[in-house]
Image (tube, rainbow, N blue to C red; front, side, top):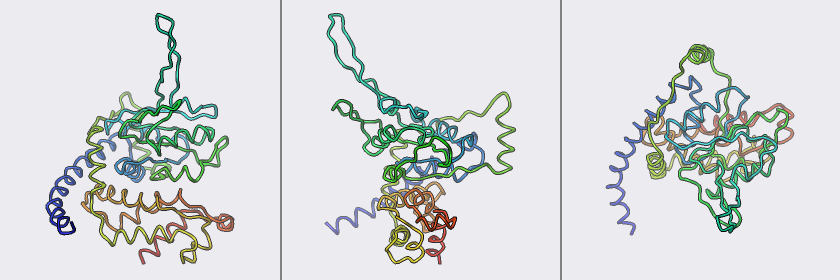
Length: 337
């Protein structure tokens, strides 16, 4: 069997390279189409797209009004996905997301229940201001993100494929928010921080979006093609040096693993899902950047979006004014050294 595998691999490599080159071209045209509508914010666009290409969900965090919603609707258009949007509010119920049973009556008066699907039955679900809803409603969404199906009255309904949730969240200092529990944050492949635009980009936003006509994005690929690219990403080889770098970075972020800085500042660190996310996203990032294999740079560039929502600082570290990002950039510096 061992012998068989190696000859198979050498035949396969050429095929994978050909497929990867096609995927590179498709991803490049997706990038270009998005940039017609979303100005600047390159790393936000990149990380959000990486989450989708790697087959996962992303959490976009930033103050209102930074075009997070516009980015998600644009991605839906460009990737050719059926998209729905839910605005989360404190009175939103799980059935408002999942759907509910309604009673039908036919001519003879016979009554029966019929399930009416909620907005979660989409290929791309925009969950706006997810931290404004009650924990019960949050967990209804987060469960479907994990299991890719919904169970109503004992009956199972599968969600469409692909299925991606892009959730937006206001910074937690704002009034009337319910923070997502740690176990639920872990379901997001990436946390993408959305900052204010750069001056040149903001000038472009002012000029391009206040006239009579605005650019509208067109579909560059479709859902079946996205599924093919996602499958390809899982087949891309990852070198031992990259795997080792992922393991040592993720493990260095956990207290009790021999990293003095982490032991001092980190209350709890990332679990194995962080490494899995890193394996998938580093391959996606290679393709996004026009390369056929992930490198150490991919790992270090992804450290922040992949690790920051999967670890927490000690009270002492927070009191000193440290942030999770500071800790992660320190670990990346050590790893690069």
